[in-house]
Image (cartoon, rainbow, N blue to C red):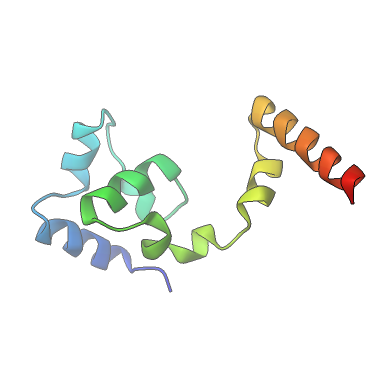
Length: 93
């Protein structure tokens, strides 16, 4: 189960930091949205500050196969590379 937003905030406070400080330290105006939606960069920042993996804090956001996520990406280079690898795997089967 995902951590409640209040748990994330409290854990950060216990580490002597908060979302605003992490945002400033990493060049963002804010990263509060990480508490309610998937944002990989901000999730990694928060997880590192807590000494955890993002998957431990928000397991539901990482439940989907990473390969499927790559296939659904809007990044054309990643999608093209994935499509080529998928085609090759199908021909080998």
